[in-house]
Image (cartoon, rainbow, N blue to C red; front, top):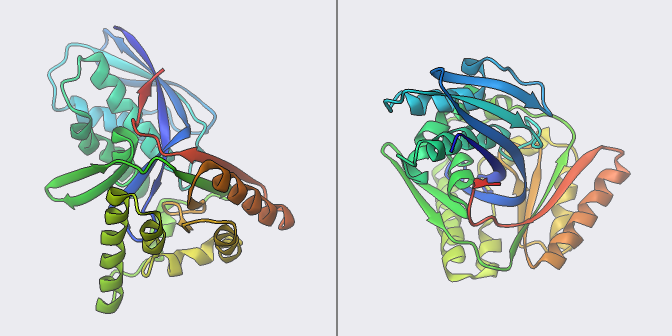
Length: 306
């Protein structure tokens, strides 16, 4: 096999209570990528469509992730990468993670899978470090593993994959403004109160327990962010109204997707998810703010071959 075409899924990170440690994989929103094995050593980005991103390998997240992986392998070939972006940069649904995860997954497939999907996360994280200044795994882990993922530890890296309850759906609205992850991180405090931390720990545990027991009400009660959302929500137009509208239309919970500006809602059943999408759309229509909206089941597989 000399060439592989991939679907590189969008993701929702943080999930309110799980800053930098929780994420989920979306099913019908994502990029496409072609990875090709060539004789000339190294990694080259030969084409990017849909976004104005650098072709230089060391300045592109997919190139950086691929190089990090190849540094650990003795291979007598190189790789070309074509990227077809459908996830907008700065949207809050894992644009850089999709590219990073796709690159390492594709190369791994063409080399006969020397690494497991979980092993690939450490390399994809280097693309995230280029994009945001921080090698976080809450987007690349679900992009590679599918379902929900929990990063129990970064040192050493310890990731737990969690299956999604069957009827769980995500609705994500992206107001058409760009909010860079690095900028969204700059508003965060480096220290939090013990009271807030205790509340956040309880919600992380509750969300994980809710996923394992398929307790939708517990999932909803746990989707509360005591620490990050109050600081970041002011950067997102109409945030409070969108969140309230989601609850009024049946959402289990709602919050900022990743670093924003996208806002997610989780719900039980596709019909409710679509109802939430309509209500969210109405809010931004009245504000005359352009937006994109996605309704998706949870993707159990992560990056996949097309």
